[in-house]
Image 1 (cartoon, one colour):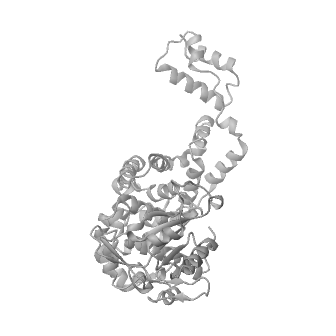
Image 2 (cartoon, one colour):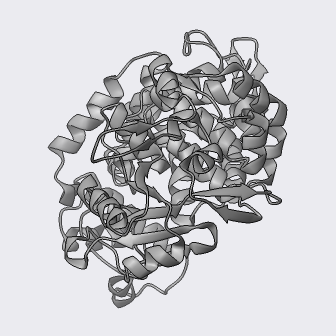
Length: 450
């Protein structure tokens, strides 16, 4: 959404004699010459006054001083009044100070204010604590946010321990911002995170999942996970990834180092933009290796690490409350990532079935990143790209030559044998041995006599 709508809201509020400014991440991004994802406004007007000025306002958090002002309907990108996307609305928040955070997320009580300094003092990080007058261009910076932007520092506003006690998720947000902008975390902020890392457990698993997903998909996953490790947060939110550290791999296949090093290098090689399922599949693809590590006479081995990894990843997806369809794709990526080593020996029918896996583009992208993070041999990746170009889609997923009804009509009794027969026919079709319905029925009579 363009900032023009946010500015028009500010101008309208000022016409009613209220203070109003752009605030938070949009100010940070504008100062960094980045395109903000959305625009937030802070004002001295109370929620009731904002709703009176803008009758269509949605009181999504009026008790905390927050309301949404939607774009005019004809300008909305998508959605409806009942499910208004953030991109189609401006969040307008009343200046406030927060009193107590019993649940480690929301204030027990808020006190509305006329002073923007009070409002900024309860925000998370200095780079997110600036206000901007979009008309004059003046930046209201009461916390040294511009200085920290210039120096590349993530610093909590005021006392870090207090800021993190107010909302424990801020510890993960500090990591995400430091990774995204390639900034350092201020020493006192870092020390507080290390001291309080265990308290991240009180945050809802959904909020943790969403923050980790942002880290994985914003293009700086490797740095984010190194910072998670440094801050002691990794062993709290994903102990299964922390367990990868120091798990050695056979140098002939993995000259880059241990499982943790390999996994973080893989994250660095993911395509951008990257889907959340591909990112999580990449992070967890070798999660079964620590549990299956053994030193054999010939080399280090991880027998059964795929099956073990699928089970561990299933537990993680359940713990972090993944949607069922997302979890299914993540588990499929883990389950199939070693099959790429078998491609050159696959029968034509097996290869075509492999190519038609749901979301195969993600499987292929994971294989490419996996290869680049280890032996760097992309021959299989290039071969499969060529196959996908050469083989028409209708040959990868052709219409069935015969059905169960055809088998019944030919005298076969329904039962478990049907699946075996139909799969054999499909294999013959995919390999070009059975080009027609007639040839398929002849094959069935000879290969599966009544």
